[in-house]
Image 1 (cartoon, helix red, strand yellow):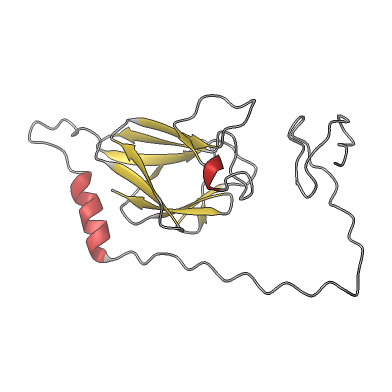
Image 2 (image 1 turned 180 degrees about the horizontal axis):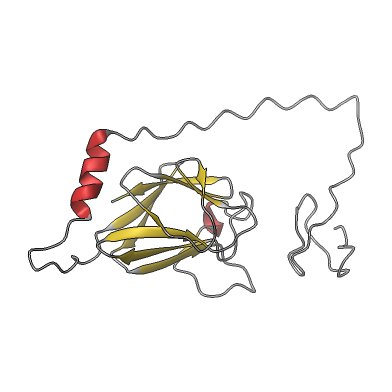
Length: 177
């Protein structure tokens, strides 16, 4: 295993950042070989289509009750590109990231779904329920959080709608409300 030039800890070959100190590590040395054949291009990931019905349903979920008080949080799920659905229930605050030996408590651990390989941070984003709707906020991650291909700025809340496409690093999920 290669050694981090900053802290002298071992890191996994091909990693972009040292797991111990978090600093960027040098790229692996590439030695040209006649035996290596070019890898086929990765197929482009196409976003899920968001229909007008999806938007209308999301707006209905955000509606408030007769008394003007926001309803309880609607049932929230995230669907991975593989089709796996992660059921988040109706919680008011959900921290999304990937667990490792040093990470803090998370509500959604994306490590079993390839989170580490796809650039999901230990504490990547938080989804909160406020004012009758769900919002997402980036937690100042290196690999960014995106909603429908638009980058989120850390510390700012963005409303979620049914059918929205979220990216944590390069991991893409669909919001199901």
